Length: 433
Image (cartoon, rainbow, N blue to C red; front, side, top):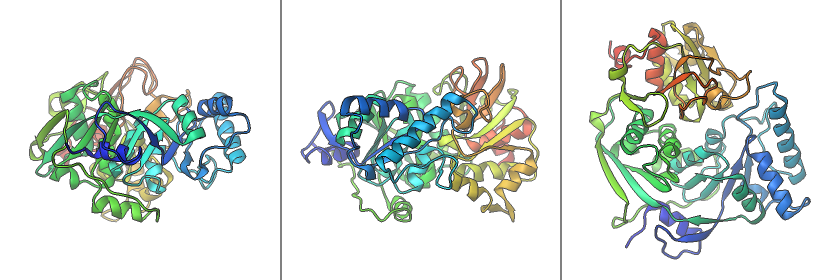
């Protein structure tokens, strides 16, 4: 029996023998990522278990990216940064991207890709549930807790159970108004928030392989919202081109065997997709945008690891160009690179940044910002009883701030169209008229 892509990567990092779902393995770790929320806890456990003077297993393989609660006056959040900064200095870490410096990057999941830390065939663990984003590069990548991360810090290994794989195949071509966010919300709506629990979500099909790296990252990013252990997409020329522009480190491309065994195979016709969203208060509470058309809103938010990439902002700008927003609209680039691209990318001679400012949107610093609620002075944080349409990944009560706010998850196209009208709006009304 052949192996899936996920199984092959785990096999290669555990001695090379064939593996199957349910097997428990010691795997060698290529990259460990942590940030300002979980980094201090991980460091504390590491020092307690391995000693105050212990050194990390390989400083070239550790990446620390503060991104969550950083542009704030909150003293507790600031203390977390102090701990990371001291540890990076103590360990002489080359990949600590400190806030407040020219080396600051932004949201960890996109920064990992932009800085060349995502490479096909490798294993990457991170102390953040959306670490599954990196699976877009044909690698095994998943979120772990502080204790597991501390163990990796000391040993470079982790005990892992091989997940079953579910395959989602989209054949044909996505219509121009469909984005990866529509696709992942469609699938989560089909299988539920627990439908992929401790399973790999493998994306395939002609339509998937036509997507940009940024869009592939959106797909893999929300595997955790379906309970997934990881998500993965076969590396191809698009992947190689992106990676080689950012690193000269070698990598290995694996692919699923034709006779690989899957827990589930689900096949979709990409041509038939239409814009969807997730209604409050769960990512699997799916509806078509047309079904919710006209629902009144208080604000729109375009940003986060899910919806703060340059392709997301290009889409939003296509809708917002030459228009004014009807409701408070927040634009938050995920990274400094994306922020710079907002002033470089143009539509009919006008930069994306100018399009957003002229439309009346508010521009935030590159970070997670309101996606995780954050301290009270967090940019874009929701207030009581507000209805928000957002390109973020979760919409349970309190996720973006107030426990009484209601969050609709949608694509950048849908969020931007709704920002213009002040109510849920089908982006096709703008794109084709």
